[in-house]
Amino acid sequence: MQTYREMDIGTAKPDAETRSRFGYHLVDLVDPSEELSVARFQQEGAVVLDRLSDEGRPAVLAGGSGLHLRSLVDPLEFPPTDDGLRAELEAVSREDLVDELIAADAAAADVVDLSNPRRVIRAVEILRLTGATPSSRAGRPAATAVRDYDPSRPFIGIGVDPGDALAARVAARLDAMLDAGFLDEVAKLVSRLGRNARQAVGYKQLIPVVTGEIALREGREDAIRATMGLAKRQRTFFRRDPRIHWIPWHHDRDERLETAWSHLEGTWIS
Image 1: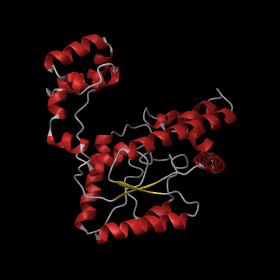
Image 2: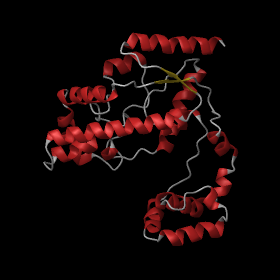
Image 3: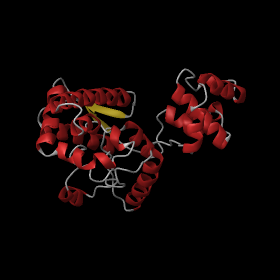
């Protein structure tokens, strides 16, 4: 969400001085009214990573979106989309779409969750736009590499275990954002937030506060619950990745950095 301009406080975006000092990339790419797909993020990121690689400079990929991370280090492929076709398919019954898929690919059920309408619609959309069946796409070398966690770019992955006091830290972090003007930021942007930006954790829960539908206390509680839910999903996603080395939580930031650095040095040396 830091790719969206003006969504600064709620995404914990580094300030301008910090970004200038350390050379941040892929921040403030689009206006909040725009849609930024993972495919475009992948394209933008590849340009940056290729340039840094040519210059012999390492990149640090930091953040909580597992799909966006994998789009930069793994050979994820993103078939085209078509809003008009998507709307047309959403008006068709799931049963008819499943029949269309099975007619084109008898083994589609082995690849696509046919009980999930969203996945069925996407599979049919790709089939109509490209002619590629679910089975043929799953059998491509790139898809196999993604399933096997075989990266297209070498990297060292480090995860920090959140420890037992995550809920308290989440609440304190949100309160600090509110003190810094988060609610005012949402109020300023609410009329310009596009479909993706409106789903950002924190913004989504505070929009009803800005519009007068709920009280700030309720919005704050909703935002904390949503953040905890996001953190749980992030842990589940990243724990499946065998390439990530996990270091234990420590309240002292310097201690966490030292532990991470020790692993980096040991990995580079080996």
